[in-house]
Length: 89
Image (tube, rainbow, N blue to C red; front, side):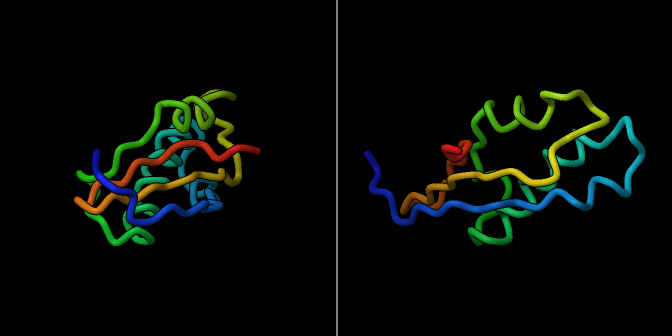
């Protein structure tokens, strides 16, 4: 078992998805979550493991109406891997 180096809860704004075509909004929102975590955890995208619950929450209302923000708990391990899951509401 690898020790947890850091654990943080982020509120990720998804405002940027309003400027893409309606049918691409949820897909763009998922990529925005990756981009945000990449920037704030200082980790490359290939080392970020996202729980499927995050994707389900974004796609819950279909491809045209993703949420405007989402709360995510990210845990960064000492080997550089980041695991993200939905934060408890």
